Image (cartoon, rainbow, N blue to C red; front, side):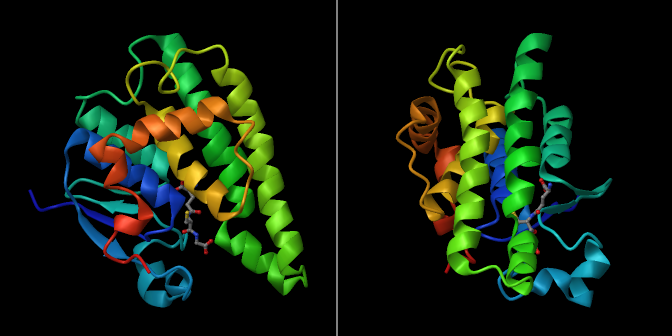
Amino acid sequence: MTEPVLYGYFRSTAAYRVRIALNLKGLSAEHRFVHLRKGEQTQPAYRKINPAALVPYWIDDDLELAQSIAIIEYLDETHPAPPLLPADAKGRAIAREIALVVASDIHPIGNLRVLNKLIEMGVDEATRGAWSKHWIETGFDAIEARLAHLPGPFALGEQPTLADICIVPQVFNARRFGVDLTPYKRIVGIDAAASKLDAFAAAEPGRQPDAE
Ligand SMILES: N[C@@H](CCC(=O)N[C@@H](CS)C(=O)NCC(=O)O)C(=O)O
């Protein structure tokens, strides 16, 4: 079996999720970098690989796959230990609920192509920043309320799950946009607990070979 390939970018929070999952599983991949700020994702060479012009993109002997959540669940099913979802149906549903607040409700609205479109439409930098902050806070409000009823230190207890894999990169992004994290005690607690694990720490954007 040849080594799988993961296309990513150091600051891509969606690729960051997949890096954490790989590390938690102890799996390796060849990391190839797509410079999103330079627009390499929209160039023909990359569009030929992933016509959606986004990272992450996964290639192994059996499958080519876009969408971080699909990639992570595929890794979890093909390499079950340690599990990235709780053993019970209720726990799995809640982990997915939290992951989807990040991946479906927060992330797409602040994605680079959306912000680039706002620039094209004449929206100034301060307004774009306020836009991103607003949607991060809206999503974090929902997650923090949900977490209030769940045991820590991670979203669903002692072991990190898909929920934490999505929360931690979004916290990184929230800090970049200057979101005040004071109201999000559980979210900040998850980030602190995760930073103590090598799997999360090694996936941090600043530690990637393409970091700038
Ligand atoms: N829902 C997708 C989102 C992928 C995505 O939007 N990735 C961003 C980086 S985090 C990207 O490639 N952006 C390039 C652009 O917006 O042009 C996933 O979870 O994989």
